[in-house]
Image 1: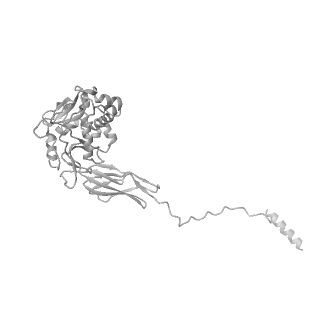
Image 2: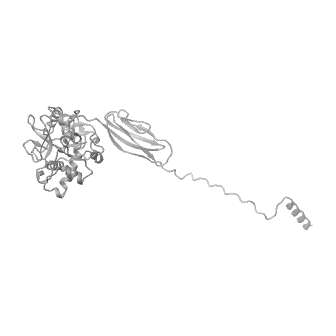
Image 3: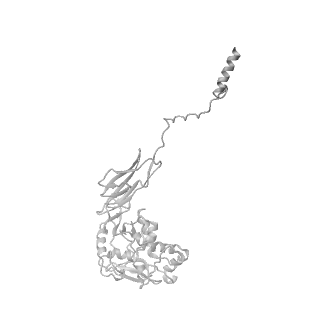
Amino acid sequence: MRLYLFSILSTLLMAVGCTVDEPAPNKPDPKPNPDPDQPKPEVVITLSDSEITLQKGEEFQLSATLSEEVGDISWESDNKKVAIVDRTGKVIALSTGDATITARCAEAEAHCVVSVIEKPEVGWFYYDDGSYSAKLDYEKRAIGVIFWIGDPTAHDELLKQDHPNCTNGLVVALNDDDVNHHWQPNYEQYGASVGEWIEANCPEYRTITSPWNENEVVNAMRGYNNTKAIEAFNAAEENAEWPVEVVEVVVAFREEYPAPESSSDWYLPSVKECSLLLSGEVDGNVLDIDNNITNLTTINRKLELIPGGLTVGHTGFEDDIWASNERDYEYAFYLSTLSGKVWMNWKYYESDHHFVRAILAF
């Protein structure tokens, strides 16, 4: 009987296509649930600048980067009377004061402090911390007076390379050593122009030589270039017996009156920069200017207000200031502080009224 029942059961199983010992088909294991306690990656915003100083009316483009792409960045100013910011991060300075610009994304944020200052003007006082003001601040150390507003780096390639942020204008030093100087006392022993040596040995500098009938060089604002080129000439061992004295004077002045790091440091002005100091901005060739010391009158009044200040030239006397340009191996240029006219004289010339007055770009 048992054998009969087993036979019937086997027959039924075979009829439905199954075997007694056939394993069930494999199924993939379910994916584990994510760990709800695992922290999400932290988003960090990095700004291109954390502090900036702008002049009133100036614009500045801030940029921001995200450590994780999680959304768009929003921008906000906490003091819209001082500075505003658009959706791209462009900051516009509206009035003097401070504002904080904040960039946000998700829960992350970053900040940039914006200080807005007045745009300088001719006749403002310049201090050893790089600041300036319309009225003399006796709690600071004034080291000069602003005599020209503009971008000097637009004219001097070397200045732009070394000090690209000095785009506001030029400052004349508060004083000089009140001693007359030669341009190059031993030029006759040397027997060549300084410009020839520069052109042969220092191609990174522009020439300082300006023949009388070639006006391009003498009308260029390249006092920084000229000074650095002459410093290279003076530093060369083969030129030890005939240094350019007027640049040695400027180098010594730097030690006594340190300039702020934000400036170009002191240098000997070119003919054009001397003319800007005396006459201001005048169209045409600087060699044609005469009987114009309009700018100098303003600057000297301000210099007299600074403790230790000394006017450029002794008022009422035919004093002169040396420029950093030479005409050839014999002659160098100077300008009259009484008329603003450009002259030239022998490099060894020394009188009681040939002075050196340093300037800087800021």
